[in-house]
Image (cartoon, rainbow, N blue to C red):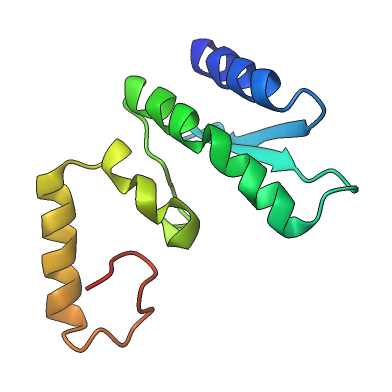
Length: 115
């Protein structure tokens, strides 16, 4: 509850006119924050505005020892924030595994690492 309260405060302070929706998986504790795009904003304007709070949201995730991503993977949107929930050593291990299974970098290039 404290985590949700903090995230709600961050979003409300930065986007008082945006609607948000929490959903997730109660069995494993995965929560998803979905900030809904207002009809009057273009997709590009919306994504730009959402970038404002990413740092604050992911700092809060780190504070609660959470992860920036769960079952859906990291992907390009969260790629710059991987260090908020993974150590430098863990990221190096991930890169090493990627190199073992994809030495030519042809599977999902640039989706998680820029090699």
